[in-house]
Length: 203
Image 1 (tube, one colour):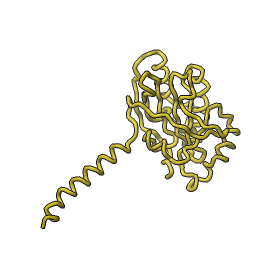
Image 2: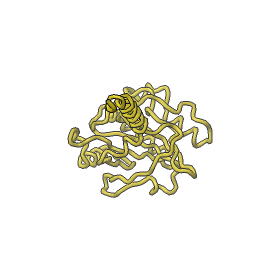
Image 3: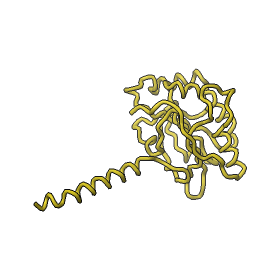
Image 4: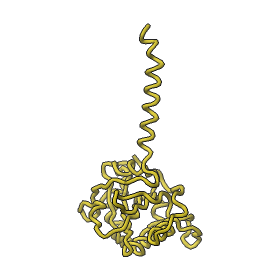
């Protein structure tokens, strides 16, 4: 009899627990401080944000070899690094997919793709798939702009690179460029969050 009386309470506890887990797993919001990581680069070295002593922030890009959306954006991601790394905002690319499901995203294939395209930015593997959930990334590509502060790397923008994945020449809104330009000028970012368009991250 006592068990039946406790059932509604137990259901409520489990329900609240479920909601709390969802909240914890949603990832970063604009204004949150992102924790550092240590991930393997295509050159075999481990890379952390703390390695970039002179950086003012970062353009964190979750991307891969196999998604057509990510491939469509490769040249634009490279252009972002060439434009902003020298200004203190380097691109840090992270491959988040499960390589058993997507063998085309293996480290060997990452190295091959980076060489073919001449990537000038770090291309890291989230081997244990621990980092992309912290960020809340769901797509490739999915962008997070971080700005260094005394409190850590603050998330300032989340979402898409621009408003046209199909045609770089037809882009009207360059979300990432606009955001980084605003940060460099000490201005507020007008659009701090957009919907990432791409392939789902394979778990």
